[in-house]
Image (cartoon, rainbow, N blue to C red):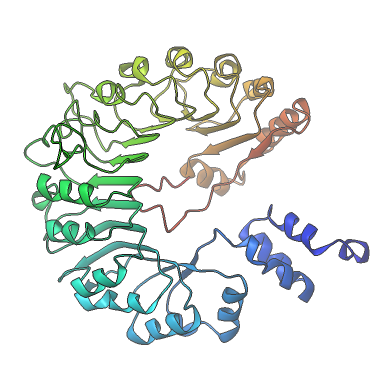
Length: 455
């Protein structure tokens, strides 16, 4: 131990980067020297701390947060005194998200945000407002400061009024709005009016990422130009922001028209999350993908079978996520369309066949591969992945119910058989491949309940 202690501090900090949060805290408790190193700000730069009932935290706890320079927090309902504590002990907060409030809120509740001068990122989840959520005064105070805003599963008094207020936040670069509705009941879910949505896109010229979702299904489909506001000076041209990332959440095929994305040629990333598919409705993904010839990242969660849109996947795609039923025939069809694919995320079930054996031949340029197994464990064909000469990271995950069932039966994941396969794979690849079998941690600032897949 004395020889190890002679290592330079920067070496220890580098080593600690490979530890999980729980492992870092275990090391931190061993001695004062490691406590100081574990609290180094570089280890916590992207971390967010989840706080609740601020009265129970000690002065030492707040000192630790300040030593780590943590400025990103997720909180539950804050009372007036708790607001004062947060502002006093963490005045440099840059990002805050309110989760699971479970109460009725009034307009003045968020006025405390004006006391956080460094605030740039705001999120609100799972709450009900009986008055305007963003008042005029608060909006003016945040107008030049906010760059990220996420609102999910929040019941508003007037959705149109709220979107009109958001359109005045001129420096927004990231906007997530998953609509819950007005009042109560599914019949109250109505899309943001075309004129209001167009005004939002025309005002937010700096917007790069848009995540737009809706629960329920309106009676009529959206207009053809819903996502394509015309330029006021040149109506024939697209006047909205140069979006690079678009995420459509719970939008059924019947809502968006075939030409919905025709003007969004600047997109580099597209994610479509389906809740359900109606029988007899033609898949519109092919027409949505057709104009997106510069697309680099494509994620399809649910929806129609892969064969309905395989031929229209742009050849520029280098990152592909497919959470649909996949067969070997589907993979054979996808491979020629994405010759430069470097990152692949797929699911494997009993109908998928020996995907691991085919992947090295179909996608030889892969650098990262993520496979979620359903109702089965990886088998011996996993060893074929060592033939991927560029593969650096491999994630092997199974559904939570599978893990829980085996854990209760005394067989924790990964099983001894899977661990043996992983050891053989590492040996065959000369330890080139990093194999991950643990579930990743949820990012409370970016992943709401609509996006979190529990993996």
